[in-house]
Image (tube, rainbow, N blue to C red; front, side):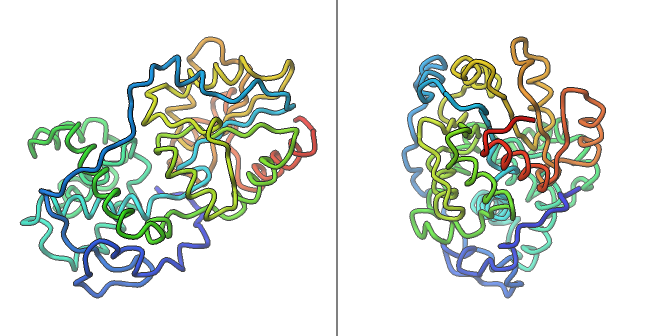
Length: 334
């Protein structure tokens, strides 16, 4: 199941965005662009940002206590940005590098990417796109089985294909690093801003009545570049929390933001992952947060139905999201 809202930029993604590393060999539709060439397994992995900061230290990096009447905490992928095109392409590239003898027919590229698009709701960490790419190529499981039982399927595939999680994380990151080093603009291109969302966030960010924070699993510098270059949104570094770097759960970040909020401030957390919102519901001390599940992100109809049955969670569309941020930007509440 895929979201009903499609980013307007999707129809303008060009072949250059997909072929920044290596020359394409297959003729594929321009809307999804050409498959990239093979990437060597022996390619050196660039150094990654340090992950040594303690959880307490990472949360303490938050901005000075807020005086705004609304604190807005946003997830990034699936709320602000549709990163599925880029993450799917990176998954294909990584699979080609790992299993060249399996991914030797580039005429299957469009079919695999379409399957990755449909199964995006199950992805928690980027390298899972690589597993899904092979799963889809070889038709080891149906789309419905993947959607309903990926938590059980993934470890079985890891064992079947003799894969190590840490190595998969590093390898998938190396594919992205290579792409960005070769052509940053073409990497940015298939990271799409949802129509109507960028404008609403920009309005809130420029208001003194709203403190906007981004809480994401994406490395902060990448999220910042996408927002700045594609939506003209500039979130200060001390308001952008990356779990990839800090290892701090979103629940702990929300507790820290709540502690620094002005007395009586409205607290709003916007997510596309139902499982994340359920963790917030289960965490003591976070009862003051209003929880929004967006209906355009990486979630399924079953998850949206589950959210509607939860009194703590509100399912919102783009119009409601924009209206909420617009009222907050004027200093209004609920």
